[in-house]
Image (cartoon, rainbow, N blue to C red; front, side, top):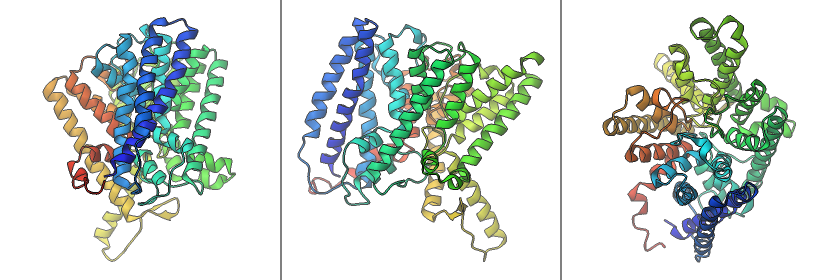
Length: 493
């Protein structure tokens, strides 16, 4: 294990976090929030000094393998969340360190689960930092570092490639351009342009600029932290529609937008995962709308509102954003059940959305179909195809392993929550699924009208780990806590 290179990444991450907190200080100055300035300055100084020390550690020539990349990513996100929580603790807005850590992990992992019972009591600068964690975590912290810091092409497939594989969501990761640094820059350029565009549309719809900026952060990162207690419900229907469309757009694989920019329209619009993803949104919206009109509390003159609420809720759940315009926990059972199903499916690979990803579901279903055919016709060998290309057996194996470990972690987390806190099954199950899939709201006590403040410290730590596991797609966090990968490293280092 190359601990020196891991220390270097921790240093770079801390210095990046120090830089990213500076705008929060400016917000505090603009709104004359003197109580928030000192906490941010203290943490900025801590991150800058510690980051500079770690980044100056003398490096060796061993390079970086997959295990170093995975450990760096997992440890980096924990370090990022811990120091990101300190302004809340020092300022007294969230005095309990476990609560502050939970809230910050929820921000960086773009989950949106919250322990706050009165979000509007936060200062503007704290609200800004809370929402900006969504935007920074949405595309990936290490991906951002790749865009601005040169990476070497070292052993094991290249330093940048290993880091991108460890942090980027989806069953496989590739390059859009000849160099990964250029790929990372293009991804962030698309991300920035789409975010700015969304801010402009929200301002035009009548939303105040500060609210628009923070809502765009949450929408772009598919995170869901709002600036009001009722999330998006008190804004205009036009604003709600813009946010819903924005969530849907950020749930699409960003490589699709690159193909459109390069005028490769056929390849972009024939993408199987995108068509499936949009199809799920369309069908789910229609089914929930029909269910609400038949069995819900919407009257005949409220069909437009019911349709908008259906479209918004489907998008907020499938993209794992977590915004809300209606309390879907009060909807008919079929609608609630369907939302839980798409809660698991998630958005597209290569997007800012969470969940298991639509591409994995496609691969899983096609693999099951192939195995059924092989039972009937043992001599017939058929490859699993996506977008006209065969899916490698390695990807299929990894996908099956992912689902197995995913459910093992989910059931284990539910067992701990049920044993320690003993809340009802609906709360326990959906709390775990909401955190593991980086969604935010679940059902019952953790529904759109509830929060996570009632959980014990132990359960909050478990749910925080679930959020990190879900955002980093399991393997980095598992490797971080696997003792065997650290053995026999002293002589090599």
